[in-house]
Image (cartoon, rainbow, N blue to C red):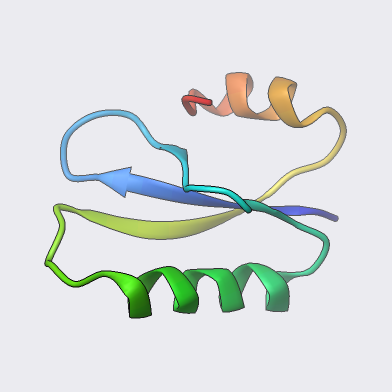
Length: 68
């Protein structure tokens, strides 16, 4: 199944992280999270999460209440 990298703010809805954010494997998604975290120079009021989905990406995002 494919995986999405999400940003999760302290307040507010989850949203897709910056592109690329859609990966075929968990390992690729985890590598992207590591890359994003390594590039952040400041502490943010957000954390990153990985979501597995099936079927249509936009439908899965809408069903999960995630902004895209």
